Amino acid sequence: MKRAYNFNAGPAALPLDVLNKAQQEWLNFNDSGMAVMELSHRSKDYEMVHNKAIGLLRKLLSISDDYEILFLQGGASLQFTMIPMNLLPKEKVGNYVLTGSWSEKALKEAKKLGQTAVTASGKENNYRSIPKLDKVELDDNAAYLHITSNNTIYGTQWHNFPEVVGAPLIADMSSDILCKPIDVNKFGLIYAGAQKNLGPSGVTVVIIRKDLLAQSSDDLPTMLNYQTHAGNNSLYNTPPTLAIYLLSLVLEWVDSLGGVAEIEKMNEEKAKVLYDVIDGSNGFYKGHATPDSRSSMNVTFTLATEEATTAFLAQAKELGFVGLAGHRSVGGCRASIYNAVPLDHVVKLAEFMKSFQEKFE
Image (cartoon, rainbow, N blue to C red):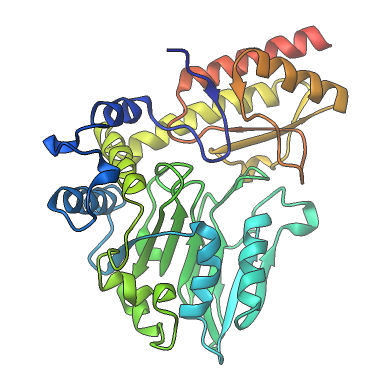
């Protein structure tokens, strides 16, 4: 079967091995005579899937028992609200580092619920780079420091996370979780919509340090309280069972490849292929992000003219490349090369970019 060269920003490519296994089990999971999405979320068959996903995530990211792993719904966008609802009391200030549209949206929601402050921002240079922050010492009134680890629209990524003193560090890792090893212990809370590196849309992973759960007030709406989900193994209500099943298969796939360290090597190789083309094009392709802030997940670039961009995207589509148009706020082009995008697809794109330049010039 012909497969597209899928460079969508999200929902994004899933590993072919995962799709094949899901297809094999589609009508009869674990000899139950039912598909996964037909299972009761209280059944032993589904409980096995659920706990396997938690266990694999804990293994792959070396998450200690000091943290709860939650499977929630509403995407990262709901976390923009749940974080201040649970962790921003009236007398405290939520601190935000602005590195793109998603961090701006997180700040916008927090402002509706409490006091906020912008600790650093890259907006003045159109978010071409990540602010230089090695160590952040927060005031006594700080509730947390929030960052967005990778910025899909602008193609920038934190390569080193700041040391934060005085309050927990919170990160939206929706678009780069599992792309490289991280020290989870540096964070109070990590959250990620699944639809980039973890699986399909529909489930959001939240990794929260257990001591922070005590800050969630009993006055909060039940479904917006982290304690509700932590106390019920994310099974207080019916979870997105199919999405969690596919998440478990993706985690199994990462584990089979040798874990996150091996995934990082693959991602570095893929990113280098495209950035080498951009850097070697004598300005025909121009990367949006500065070299020290380049993302290994989202490669953003522009061409000299709108005519060239339109022709590039049209020819790419004819050849089976999908999802290469840049976000409307930046324009140009974007290749999202998440974990599941094969190296040979990236090489094919690089070859097309070189060929297009030769013919267009």
